Image (cartoon, rainbow, N blue to C red; front, side):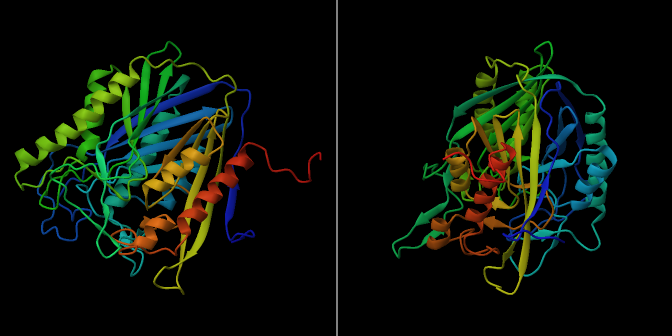
Length: 429
């Protein structure tokens, strides 16, 4: 394995500047057939005892000339699958694959722990049957999407709706601690309340895919829930698809590591708790539909697609002799949409940093997204949050202090590389 100066592996992908822009979509249900241990909540005392609403993997393949990428949104808590990424590249000629988990805590747990660090799933030496099953299902869905490409138009929309609160509250001792339950719905901050929409239409202007990017933990359902559910992102997607004919709605989680939902079902009664899920999902869906409706889409003027995948080794925060390899991917789409894909649970300040510092008209921060190898790094707090502590800030963290800032710095460096800004010699004085 070759490493460059900053202990990273760069994998630049092809760039297409003049060809037509095309897209393809597909979906597949990934609800487990039987009972499994459920994801998240160490206090949960039950395995799954049924399904409230199905879990899906949804695929969007984008193509510009010879360059292609696949974005897969998943109703799962987390995902790690380097074998799937490599297989898609080898057999389907799609070198960039973003596996974006919604982080629902009502999905199955199926990844083996990567070590002693809390909340750090990774590839098992003996993958679970469920992981092998969904890898095949996702591969087949990507293949179907890639074999049914259509000329595509793009449009971007934005709105703001605060449905989350910052759960790390500063206490009297000067340290932060988490407030997991907020039944009074007090909008503690800071948060990033913005949702960003990426709409993909066909050549006739008919909506085919709508990506909804928002940052709030998918934990409306609490630890007493024992049924598979996509939580509020599932309600969002179902309602948007019902409201916009022919569209495939896909949810991409943002920097939600320190953001909990304002709406929480904590009664331990299915009917009551799922009603709260429905409320939060409906509120977001209504806002999304209102924003998406008047969006104008157009064929990109200069269709292009390029990406850099990189694996960065970090020391363990509490185990300095340990190394954690973290894979990231930076994507530049049509010269103006810049995606920073980060695995694990990044805090919201990483998202706002990317929006402020990415030198591109449309900066998108995709958290909980596995892309270029390595492990699931768990929580990724910014320096300030790490210093004040609390759950996901020092408790349950695994990677070294400053890892989040280094990741974002690499994204910026890679974005400028994709824009052709780094030269092999100095410019004019």
